[in-house]
Length: 99
Image 1 (tube, one colour):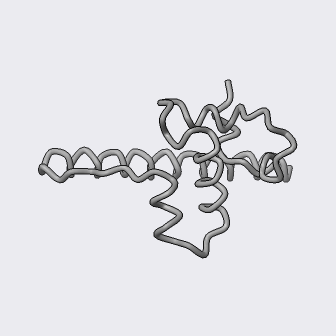
Image 2 (cartoon, one colour; image 1 turned 180 degrees about the horizontal axis):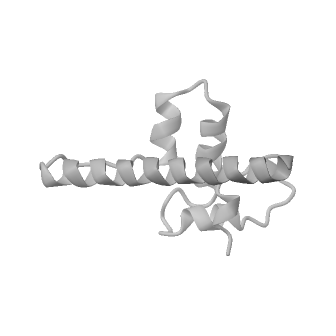
C-alpha cells in the first residue's frame, strides 16, 4: 500500500518537473523571440561566480582536466573519465551522460 502511494507521488513529481522544464523552455523561446541574447557559461565562469560552492569547483576542475571545452563533448568525456586514481573521480559530474 505504501509503495503505491510512493509511486503516485513520484509520478506527480515527474509531471511537475516536466511542467517546469516545459515552462523554462517556453521562457527561453520567448526571450529569443524578443531578441534577448542568451549566453551559456562554462563551468569556470559558473564556479567563479560562486567561489564558495564545492560542487561548482569540482565541476570546473573536471571540465579543465578533460580539455576545458576544446572537445564539443567535454561533459561526456568527464562522465566517461577513466582516471580512477583521481580523488574527484567518485564525485565527478555528468556521470549519467555516459552511454
